[in-house]
Image (cartoon, rainbow, N blue to C red; front, top):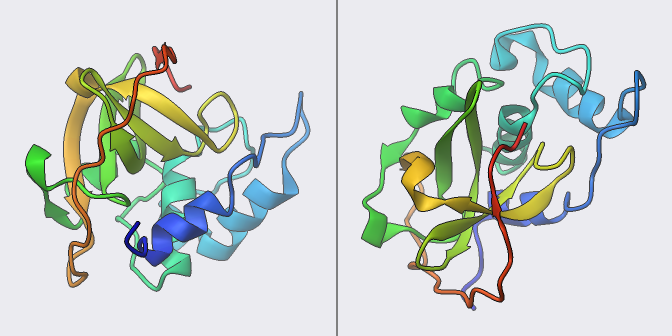
Length: 168
């Protein structure tokens, strides 16, 4: 496998990070918000119960030295960030933006099967996970400006894993 982009390696290192149960907040997720700050996030982020998929993507990008999307906490803000990719240009680490009930979702492309993309993302079942999301829900595929596109689409076996219906 080709060396994956630094931001995807940063994302993989966070697999398993979870929200704190109940009214508590994850110190890890709150630490990401504090490091990014309100200027990057576009809001005061004060609870991990607030959707944090954009916060996760912004954290991974910033750790790789890449400027996140304006108002990075909003998933759909990533739909105009970077440069667009065609479906056939996808490579591990591409930023995928999805429609979902009540808003959007953003995460990283990790592979695909005929009906869905495997997404490495935050706030998927209240954790950083690998989740299958229907291709039909994808509204944007992006790559950081100034970074060479490395890799190509990755076909994965289905294994009967379910497709996510709502990442909130």
